[in-house]
Image 1 (spheres, rainbow, N blue to C red):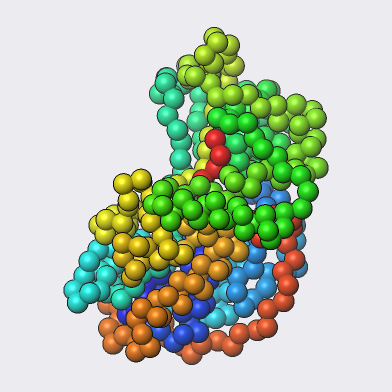
Image 2 (cartoon, helix red, strand yellow):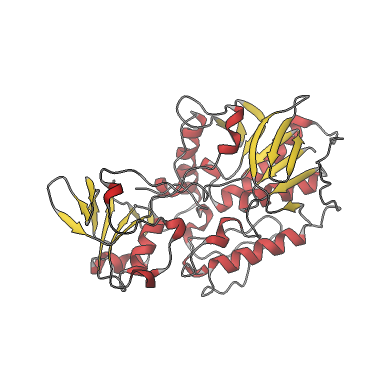
Length: 386
C-alpha cells in the first residue's frame, strides 16, 4: 500500500481524487457510518442557505442545491455522488486507532478493520470528534444542561428556557439568532469582543488571513481557525440581531453556580442551559505514537507536510481548515508524497484488498457559485473564538 488516507471529509476526498489520478495504490479509511464527513452530523436547522460557503470538490461541481434543505442532506448526498463518480476506495466504518513506526521504513496503521502497512499517511480527520469545552469554577455544580454545538438539538428545544450561549464564532451567533425567539431569555458571553466584518472579502484578504494561521503551524503552535482571524461576516440577520439586542455581547463570567453564571462583580444570570459554542480541536490522537507535537503544543508544518516525519501529511489542519483550503491541501499533499516515494508503485497491499479501478475521467471544472462572499474561506469544523 502506498498511501492510507484517514478521513473522508472534504480534505480526505480531495486527497483521494488526486491520488486516483496518479495511479498510486491507496485506501481511504473513514470512521463515519456513511458519506458526508462531519456535515452529516450537523443539526437539521442548519440549512444549506445558512452555510458560510461551501466550495466544490475538485473535478465535480456542487450546483443547484436547494437552500432550504438541511446542509447535512445536501453535502452528504454530494459526497456520496463524488465517491461513486471517481470510484474512490473508501472503507467504512473503520476506526483508525494508531499510526506508528512499522517495518522497512513503513508506517503501521492499526484500525478496527485490521492493520495496514503504508509508505505514507494523509491524515484528514478534521476536528468534529474533538469538541472543546473550557473549564470554569463551579461547572460541575450546575443543575441545568450543558450541551455543546456538536450536539445542538435545534432551536425548539430551548422553548421557555433561560439560555447562556458561550462563544464568539459563527456557530454561536447562528444559535442565538435561532433560539432567541423560543427561549425565555438569552445571554451571549465571549472572552474577546467580537469583530464583525463588513464589505467584500476578497482574495487579498483571504491570503492575509491564511498567512496568519500558517505562521503559527510553521512555528509548531496550535492552529487558530481561519474564521478567528477573518472576523464574523456582517449580514442582514446579524444586523437585525445587533439592533434588537439578541447579539448584545457580555464578557465571560467568572464562575458557574448551581442556578446559572456569575461575574466577578457579583452580577448573575440564572439559566437552565449553558450552550457551549466553543469550537473544536484537531483530532490527532491516532498520530500520538509518532511523537509529532512540538514543545509549543502544535505540529510543525511545511505546507501539509509534518516536519518531524515527511511521510505524514495533515490536510484540513491549520491554514487548510476551510473547504477551499482543504481542496488545495489535498493536491499539495499528493504532489509531495509522489515526490517522496518516487514513481515506482508499492508492491505491498492492505490485509484486505482495497477496491481497484481505473482513474475516472475528469470533467472540466466551472466557476463555483457559493452562498456568501466568504465562501472561499468557509470553515469545516474548526476551533471557534470564545
